[in-house]
Figure 1: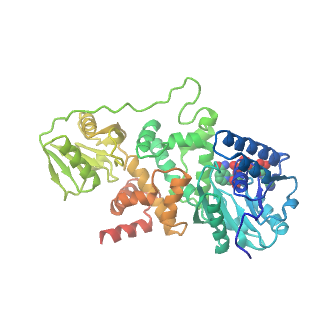
Figure 2: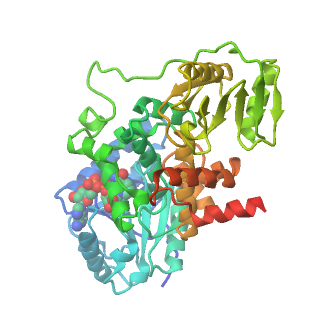
Figure 3: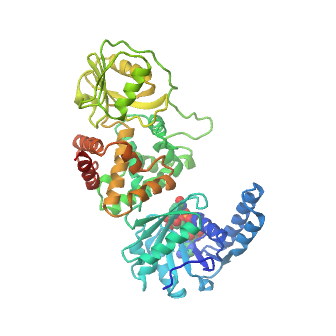
Length: 501
Ligand code: NAD
């Protein structure tokens, strides 16, 4: 079987919807003859007409050469019958997300196309192994998972099922590069890479909402401060609560109802109520006319609150940040680098960086603050106070945080607060994906940055944090909540032991 796909290879795209049209566009722009087929009457021709308008728009903006646009459009041939595509050397399927329909289509295609043809599916959630079941040559079926909008999103997950021949995956990997994409290898497991590793970004924040620990706009502001383009709630509103819920459910079910992936009643209620987010006008936020989106208050700096004895505890990057901030502000303080915890002692009060335990578990006159990830002045930062603290402590802790350059956001005393909890769980999920051979660490980082625009990959966050501290934080979450959700990845635990040695 020849495994090289060249420009001369005709490409059959089946399904002329959102994804199929985008795939046809980039294949045609890369120089292939593209057959486009859809069971819905006129859908392929209409998709071609729409693509022509899109490319003309690019030409008028000066982003595309007029003759290149014309040639690309001329290469797309809408078909009324699949049989006319028998000369295709590659098929990319982008039809309805249904196992039986996809299987049936590939069985038909296998007979129609030569033995040499490569069969690729753009499924986002169905097992590639399962789609290949029943094929005469299951080894030539591979996942080619694009992201929406196809012409703009760089990532392609090249997904191998149990029987996919490595040379087939390699051919699709090389082809993706030739089409201007960044391919990443993945093993066919629920959610592949991106849709799996991203689950905690939604799940942890939904869990905080379920406990009524914090408002959606505070969660969003705190995670935007990390560099995420959108916070989890505004992102779920954009994706559609229904779509996001259905991906979560499919990952949960495909993992035999592992509690790690359990969907949230908060999301189910929104979906049941038809509150799908932007598309329905309401979700976590109200998008109807005249509605005002709530936002956190702007940062206001503070002068140093009263304290006779100020001590910085710990020696990690956050402790160093505190040392630097106090030095710049010319505060008289001492540093206790060997301390078992990180933060500030302020006379009888303590302001501690979260280690996954709630403030109420740690002491009386005690507040915990979230993991600061950027050094930006005025960044939102969550904090919580012990349930036995004096009534003045919340205000006192908030003023200290403002003095240190943060925009403090008081929330309920939940373990690991917002950023530490979310990032630790993203790292843990990515570690499990690597442990299970789904992808490499570099592949996970590339996939999350290119597929969902994360500001950094999970293993990049890990490199800037500390595996031992993340394991400790997750163990504390596990001890607090019990159950499987905060189970530490074996990969991460081994990494922590290795680093401690
Ligand atoms: P869509 O509904 O926009 O398009 C699907 C098209 O397939 C429709 O035009 C439909 O008429 C056609 N179709 C259905 N059954 C067919 C058949 N048996 N033969 C030929 N055509 C058929 O859907 P979409 O969003 O483009 O998704 C297509 C596939 O891509 C799905 O498997 C989906 O999971 C996957 N995907 C979607 C996204 C996304 O963000 N929309 C991202 C990645 C992958």
